[in-house]
Image (cartoon, rainbow, N blue to C red; front, side, top):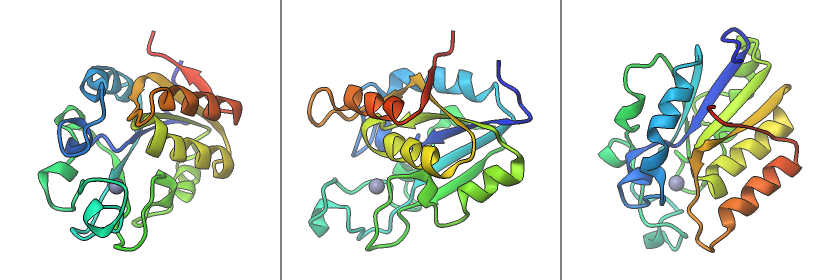
Length: 185
Ligand code: ZN
């Protein structure tokens, strides 16, 4: 059971580029209804956004690992419409040219740990994209920095799987580190 006073959901990077755009994650569209179903059960909703300048160091043009994605102000960086109409806190990351950030705990517009403490949050439920990168980094930071329980929503995540099995390995790593798992049943 979700307790709307002390539980919070954190949806990682549910942005157009990661769903249908330049860095589309396989299976990302399939999780959208489940993400929305989860989100609607919470009062405390936090969304993270990858928000890069056009010449960000993580882009291939700058010898980074990824195609250009989530450029601030572009459609690709917008949150998917499935998240429309919610009262949320949006934490932005990767906003500086020379620094990449996978974890929502590396936000540049506010400190997520302090925000969760301020809300009196005791359990944090994490979902979104992608299992093997930003979700993993976020969950691992949450386990280290957040003073409460961390849940991974298994039916509301999708993996890049650059190497097949990366997503499964990431889930194993997160649960081994102490993340609990939940599904929307
Ligand atoms: Zn990025």
